Image (cartoon, rainbow, N blue to C red; front, side, top):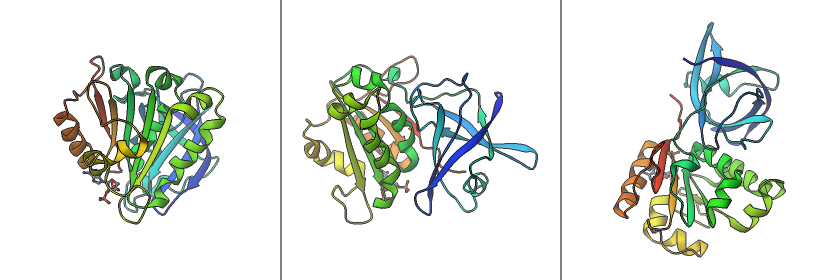
Length: 257
Ligand code: A2P
C-alpha cells in the first residue's frame, strides 16, 4: 500500500439521508489529474480502513473535496458519515484512474455520463480548462433516483460561473443535464433510455451521438456502466485506457463495500 497522509476534515455537508460531501486539507505535494481517485479512510481499531474516492474538486483547489454515500452497515461510510470539522482523515499519496482527459481522443463534444456518486470525478473535469480547450461542448449528465440527490452537483454547476479559471468558458460550453428516474422531473428516465430515444441530444440541441465526433466518460454503478458500454460500442465507440486513448472511458463509481 502506498503511503498515507493524515489530513484534517474542514467541512461536512449532508445532502440527503444517503449522501454527504466533505472537504479536507490538501498537502501541497498532493497532485492529481482531474477525474482521478485516491484511497481515503479512517483509522479503525488501530488499522487504516480505506476506500477509493474520486476527487470532486478542481486540481487547482487548495483543499480536497469528496462526495460519498452513507451505508448504515458499510464498514467505512457508517463511520465516515459522522466526521466533523477538525477530525483527522487518511488520504493516500498516489491518485490514479482512467477518467482523465488524455485517455479520450480529440473530438467535438465531450459527454460526462454519471449516476449517483459517479458524478464526483466529473465535478473535477468541468473545472479543468483543458476540457473546454479540447471540446466545443462539455455535457454533464447526472442521473439519480430522486431530484434531491442532484443538489450537490447542481450547486457546483451554478458556482462554476464564478470560477476565475473556467467560468467564462463554462458559461459558453458547459451543458448540465440532470435526470431523475423515480419521481416526476423535467428530464425523466435512465441515461440509457434518454440516449437511445434521442431525447438527451434533442433536449440540448446537439446532433445524435456519433463516434466520429463525440467522446464520452462514464462513471456509475456496474449495471449502468455495462449498459452504457454496450450502447456506445454498438454505435462504434471504442473504449480507451491509459496510454491508449479511445472514444470513451469508464470507471465504476466507488460504491461502498
Ligand atoms: P432506476 O431508478 O431506474 O434504477 P442507483 O442508486 O441504483 O445506482 O441508481 C442511480 C440512478 O442510476 C437511478 O436513476 C437508476 O435508475 C439509474 N440506473 C440504475 N441502473 C442503471 C442502468 N443499468 N443504466 C442506466 N441507469 C441506471
